[in-house]
Length: 183
Image (tube, rainbow, N blue to C red; front, side, top):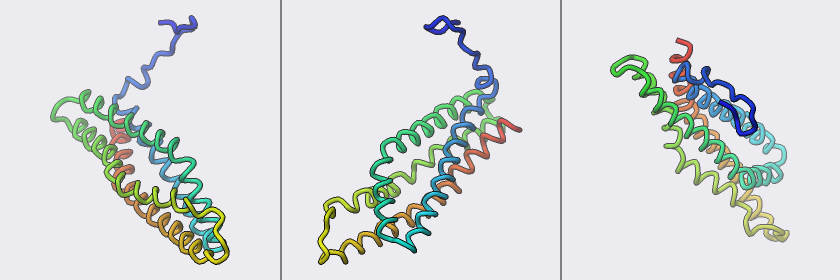
């Protein structure tokens, strides 16, 4: 088969040789992003001990500006994990251990999104924390400090929820699909 440009298309036998490979790759990518985010935001929390105002504003601005693209990536990975996990379930013989492990891996991948509503409220609080506070007067400095404290506190809550989600959903999904691929 040729592409629209006349070049031969590569065979996707690697992805089709083991039905658990694609969900393993997508859950691993999701878990890798989670590890990076934890390291990044933990560093910002540590930096807040030295300069809370700058750190809090950086956190808020980061969430506000990167949320749409970041959410699209996480949704794409989650959808890929779910659909390819369902494909893996169907590929394994009914009643087999492999099928049960594929079911578990898919449920763990979907379970990542169970944390969505609570995490969304935290993220919204951080992203919108400074809306309407630009150019605050010196007499309102105390109000700005309260907002700074709130943003750093919310980021700490997000990190805790993120750690739990990674430990109870993302990690087990990777382990299930990894076992199916690596045996």
